[in-house]
Image 1 (cartoon, rainbow, N blue to C red):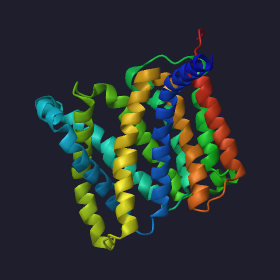
Image 2: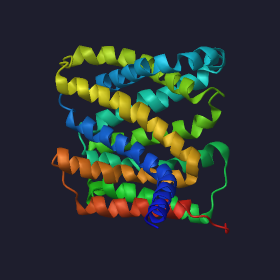
Image 3: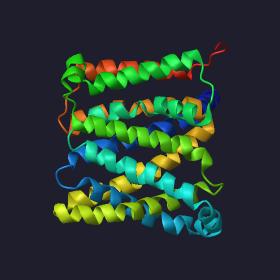
Amino acid sequence: MLKSTESKIDGRHRRWLSAAAPYLILALAPLCWAGNIVLARGVADIIPPISFAFWRWTIAAIILLPFTRAHVKRDWPQAMHSWKIMILLSILGISAFNTLLYTAVQTTTAINGALIQTVMPAIIILITLLLYHEKILKLQTWGVSICIVGACFVVLRGKLATLLDQSFVKGDIIMLAAVALYALYSALLRKRPPIHPLSFLTFTFAIGSLALLPLYLLELTWTEPFELSRDVTLSLLYVAVFPSIAAYFCWNRGVELIGANRAGLFINLIPVFASILAILFLDESLQVFHVIGMVLIFSGMVIFNRRSHGS
C-alpha cells in the first residue's frame, strides 16, 4: 500500500515537472537578460559601453564556434548568398541594440532600462504592420496602446512636466532607440536565410563583433582602456555566456514547447527580475511610477495576447 502511494506521488511529481518545464526554461531567459542590464549598470564606470559590447560578442562567438563549426561550414554558402540581410540583422540585433543599451545605463537606472525594454513586443507589432501590412485586431490595438502608455509613464517619471520641460533622462531616450532597433531586427527575422539556428547565431555574433571593431578602436582614442581585473573578467564571461548563449537556447526551446504567443509574455519578467537584482546589488529603489508603468505594460501585453474572435 505504501509503495503504491509513493508511486502515485512520484508519478504526479514527474507529470508536474514535465508540465512546468517549459515555463521554468522560459523564465531563465529573462532572468539572464535582467542580469545583463543590471550588471551593465553596475560596471558602467569601469567598462566603456562599446568595449563592453565588442568583447561580449567576440567572446560569445569564440565560445560558440567549436560547437557550431560543422553547421557553420555547411551553411556558409547560403549565408554568403544572403549576405545583405545577414549584415543588416547583425548590425541591428547585435551591434546596435546592445551598444545602445550599455550606453543608456550610463545615465539611467537598470530598473528604468528593463521597464522600457518590455514595450518591445508592442513596437514589433507596429513595425510588422508597416512592413508587411498584417492585420491587427482592435483588442490588440488596445494592448499595444496601453504598453506604449506604460513605457512613456516610466520615461516621463510619472510627470507630464517632464514632457513640457523636455527634461528627459538621456539614457531613457537612448534605451527607447535601442528597443526600436531591436524591434526592427525581430520583424526582419522572417527574411533570414534558411540556415541552422546555431549557424545563424554564430554568424550574427561574429558579424556584429566585426561591425563594432571600428567603433571600439575609435572609443579607445577618447577613453582609457579598461583594466582586465577579476570583476571585469567575470562580467565579460557572464554576458558572453548567459545573456548571449544560454538565454538564446532557453528562449528558443521554450517557444518550441508552448508557442511564440504564450512565450512572448515572459519578456515581461525582465523588469521584475531586474528590479529585484537592482535593489539587491545596486541599491536602486522601486518608485511609484515604476509600479504604475509595470502594471500598464503587463496589462497591455495580457490584452494583446488574448485570443479574440472579433475585429
